[in-house]
Image 1: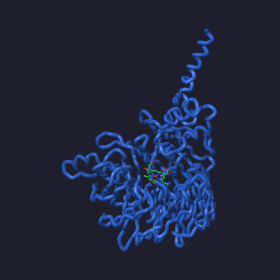
Image 2 (image 1 turned 60 degrees about the vertical axis):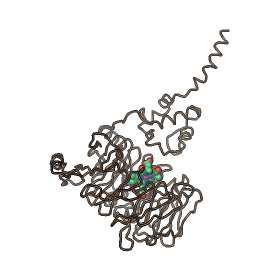
Image 3 (image 1 turned 135 degrees about the horizontal axis):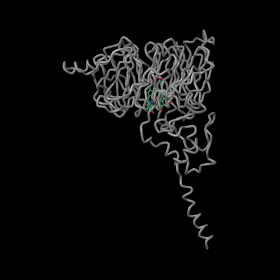
Image 4 (image 1 turned 90 degrees about the horizontal axis):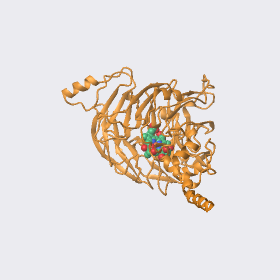
Length: 513
Ligand code: DHE
């Protein structure tokens, strides 16, 4: 009888034993590499801000990740425990963690083997180098822009996002991951210089006009980190606290070389911040100061010198920007909205409104001269349309219908065409080539049915176009920019963005900044 009770109790206990305890599973299987606080260690941070867009996390936990140190856990964890663990990793942290200067300094790793070369260690034109970010296995390929030979392929931190930023002379490049790691790479030497974790969850980076400072926009913590480009040392942490005392995430930081400043888009506050990158700047008054009395108050609080901060008040938070080439005006939207506003940065206030329905993605916008007038085009994230706007009077020139919502646009001043992908939906395998004068689609390329075919970069002279077959066993496909014929295919692991040194450092018209 006693034996029967014992065996009965064990059976009753079984579901309880199998009951998933994801926190305990995390502690025993994940914490050693990903940190007890889920903020990363040798492995990336496992928080929704970083994992949000990653598909198949359950498979990664079960099987591991090829070409990384991530092992598979299917022998230890049954599917229901893995499912519970995925939910746990996708749940937000219960507090906003700090990332102190000491922790940042400790994360900094300079490459002990790095020897700066006196001249490029390759024969290729250093101004026509193109970098390809390969998100499939977290690498960057360094391409000779004339021969398309791969000169180097180096490992990056996990989940690189946004455009890498080049030093003004094109020699160094800085690459950022969503985990907040910033990597410095010397193109002349084809070698990593070092890396530092500047934030816990970061958005993008921007280079100062003189190449001395690199700003890192962070979601976690709520701050902007400014690094010295020379040695990746911390120059300043700017906590982002709005005028009403509330904290805000930084959606993005932009370089405004003509203004000698960084411009910040705040996610949670109706303010735009401008940070001086010029030691002689200032006094840097806050915008929207109309009355004499208010002006006096603001003047007392005005900041001066390097990293002086100025606030511009807006009607509502704006988290996606596009700048006029002289950096006097910006167009801003928030992704939920259906209008854009033009903010004049000199006077520090909104000066016009634009009708922009369908979530425009201004960060991907480009400009060009059309019939003697400067226009800009932006894709929309939830509508198959490109809006073309006259930048003199801010009117909508045309909405070009496409085969689905797109993400990226590119052109070059030597090309009569702009290239627009269809990133979302059933037609994600299509790339439109559009005449910049007639605004008509002249050709739609779709060489890989049902596969994502997106993001374009031109070579320095605009003669060739590089497109990503955005798949794990993907490729960079190279086209003749005039005939639109394919000339070469380079196998790559899920290539995303591509960045030509010359086009980036000269702020070439056809490239988003
Ligand atoms: Fe990006 C650039 C924001 C999702 C790939 N993306 C940018 C920039 C911003 C931005 C502000 C400009 C920064 C810069 O270059 O300095 N991206 C956002 C979002 O808010 C959004 C919609 C949601 C998010 O999770 O952050 C988003 N972006 C994505 C993706 O899902 C993409 C397709 C894949 C990925 O790698 O995450 C993606 N974003 C890119 C790329 C660029 C980029 C490749 C650089 C484009 C360029 O040519 O300069």
